[in-house]
Length: 236
Image (cartoon, rainbow, N blue to C red; front, side):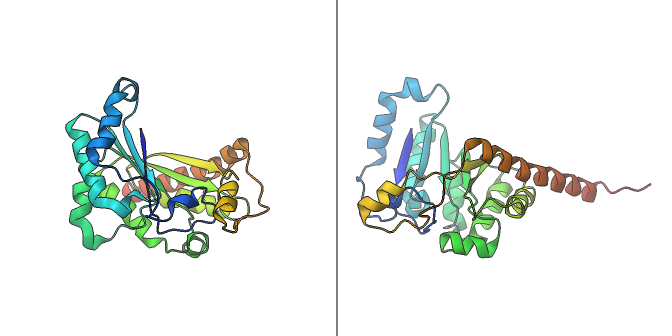
């Protein structure tokens, strides 16, 4: 069951949910209302799933999110957090420790592997994202990395290789999902009267995205081997 949270601090050029940016949209719901919906279809959800909080950015409502996940865990429901991680701040560690104690799995978006490219793509700095990933690694929370490959923006060999090297630093990574850019959000921009930032950029084929993933995985594997060499140096 996917729960979409309203409000997002980022303005990714490829965002296909511009209707999720503001917090004055959507429907107000309580924890019990959401979980009642889950319970009505529990036989289906429990087969191979649980609750995934996404957005927008669910960390914008960290107090409510924590309450939702805490109650879900009481009921034996698997919890997953789909986030950019950008809102994480070390000064709020107690709040994040509480939330993550009820979080089984994280899907973390790394928007761009280059700090300057991250700002150009999202309007925000990269540092908090990697700080959040370090936090997840410290806590041993299984994390899937997601990265949208956009022609001309996040699809170069250099950018993807750096992505692989970045995530090789962490031991909690369970996988890498390279998502091909699509234009399905273009209609929403028109309906909301917002100029579409990537007008004229063609969608990426799934097969092309698979090739992009191979580049990142190769760099990841090479970097992991270097890390092993650092831990177990050649003493011959």
